[in-house]
Image 1 (tube, helix red, strand yellow):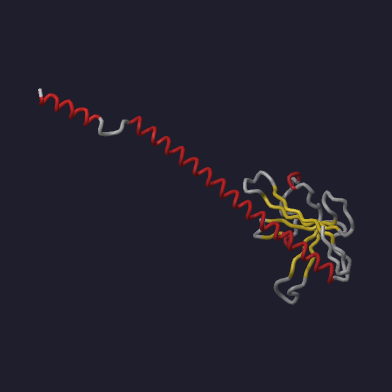
Image 2: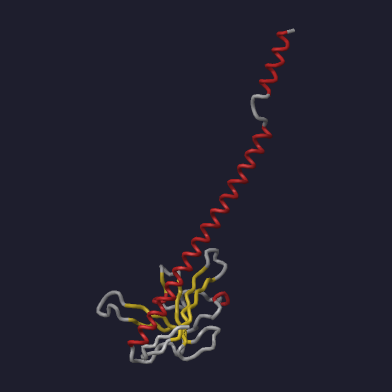
Length: 188
């Protein structure tokens, strides 16, 4: 009888030593859900960081255009550019004209005020000088304050780029009052 009792105890301990296939499948499913959730979280965080970085670069570029316009307006004896359309400003970095600010007028169609209503958002509209960061950003300045009441001394700097998802166009705008030649470069 003692040997039969020992044999029963052995069978129970042998049968209970491992996990059943159902337990393994459930634990793998839970682990899969946790890993998938982590992947989605990291992916969204990376996209948000990229978007914030691009917006920061775009804001810097728009500020640079406004500052160049202030310098150009204060040092240029000619009438300020942009009375008829969009333009961008650049500084020559090499050659005989190092440090000279140049304006680049748009030819043809001026970009639409709302970038997501501009079906032709491509480099054809923008002069090559009005592209930055390997063509990621399109930028320009236009006389007038966008949706604000325009005055002859109000300029708006626009920087546009395609959103990471490719579904829309992002835009940064900066509006500034500039009074050419007076030393009063204004603010808005």
